[in-house]
Amino acid sequence: MAEVLKGVPVAASLTEELKARCERLKALGIIPTLSMLRVGEKPGDIAYETGALKRCEKIGIAVNKIILPADSSADEITGRICEVNTDESIHGLLMFRPLDDKVAERSACELLESSKDVDCMTDSSLSGVFTGSGTGFPPCTAQACIELLDFYGVDVTGKNVAVIGRSLVIGRPVSMLLMKNNATVTICHSKTHNLPEICRNADILIAAIGRAKFIGADYVSEGQTVIDVGINMDDDGKLCGDVDYDSVEPIVRAITPVPGGVGAVTTAVLAKHVIESAERVLSS
Ligand code: NAP
Image 1 (tube, rainbow, N blue to C red):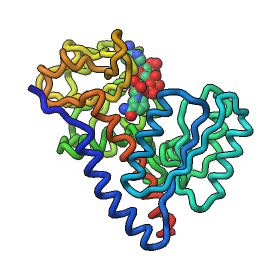
Image 2: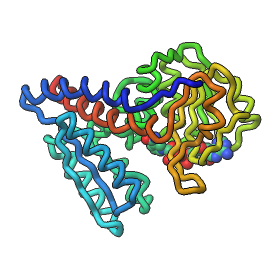
Image 3: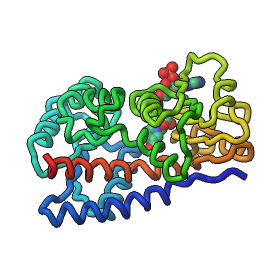
Image 4: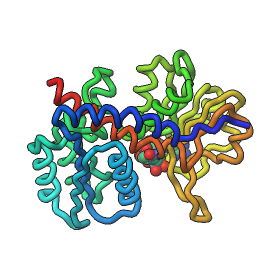
């Protein structure tokens, strides 16, 4: 049986560490504060907002919610970003993406002050992830994969890692973070030839595809660690990952569940970025 790499203990450990850092900041007169900007009432956004609120509450981070109607104009959305930029009491902004209005999304992403970009919305933060300069913060989900591997003692140094997915939110940034940690990374996508073979030959497999139970037994081999980033609904309307857990779990060495894997760590990483942003203000 595979080791199940659950996200809850990772998030709990991060939460304890962050509580102490938050208390230290408060003792110095700084209240770490996250602003969350939601446009519309998408159930996925609301679910993530609720999880992030609970996590921040546990740690002691203040949250300022901005909720705009679904038909808000680009000006209304960017106006709120400008307010966040100039409000010194706010240390980070999470804007739920994607927005239906792509023009508004692009403008908002361009406008946000990079020091408050705790989920890697801006090109400046992305460039920090790609150059490894340490400026900005990586996307929370990509960083959550790294936290999970670290917590369970999976050393990626010199390992062959296959990442399936090349989005700017997960696939590409997680590949850069893994490479920074000295992994040898193969980035795969929908045009990749021989995908099952590439996956089987990897030591670590990271699935960020967005297709329910896509990775079956023919994509994996003994001894592998499988990280499933996917959040999908199966044919019965049940939450599932990109990996067909029941077929893959008996073969591999370790695997993350869905739900309860990477997703459970993401809000803790968001909180970590807010605390770090507040600490950077202190040291600047
Ligand atoms: P995305 O932007 O749609 O990217 C999906 C990637 O998968 C693309 O690069 C695509 O390749 C590739 N792909 C699609 N079909 C493929 C196939 N048949 N073979 C190989 N590659 C294929 O999705 P995303 O935003 O990165 O999200 C990926 C998954 O993570 C989704 O299930 C999403 O819900 C989930 N997610 C989870 C969290 C969390 O906290 N756990 C957070 C955010 C998202 P091309 O580039 O060639 O099209």
